Length: 253
Picture 1 (cartoon, rainbow, N blue to C red):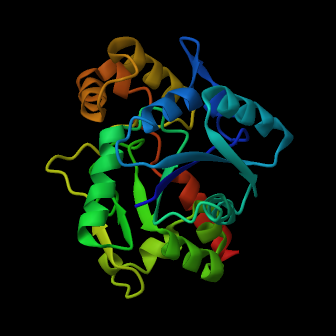
Picture 2: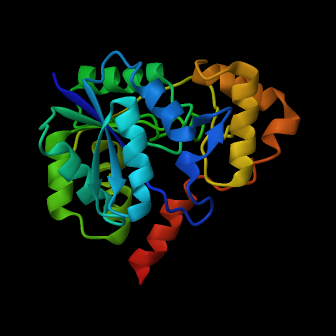
């Protein structure tokens, strides 16, 4: 079974330019992110899918230093970037992660992979029901599903965010193209924000790392966030998935 993890990373960002190259205690967000992914027991290979922007060379250099492969593709058509990253590998499954999630938990990655494989689903995630922190999002899908989406998806939001065409046409959304499954959890941690979009997010993640280091589990970070009012009030006002909501406005145009 060949399972390819692809994390998308770019330098441009309207709210926090160069965010994945920001550093905490001398370690970049992207390096922290990559080092946590490669601790997964089920991922066969990791590739960073970056852009053709000249500034993205900094990401490529960092990948070289970490010994991680990268692919440079379209800045806006991220679905095309994902597909062309995966095509030479032809994996059985692709794991989608985003590089603005420096504290992504390798055990979470493995749990979503295992849930998807055990169910025989075309697509699995931990996000059909929003219970996990923003910054612990994992999606797993068959390469054949990615290829079908690449061929058929036309909406700007589908192209920019890779998987909407798949999950919108999946069984858990009432669709009949892709069989889907959700990784469940018994508690609601959806108010926890450990992703990086704004400067206040960087402050929060820095506090988490200073307190708990870079190797703790997602729940340890989440509980710390919830128990420290001085921490969570810094960024709990930020809307989840704001980028996707903006893309939907493009669809209407």
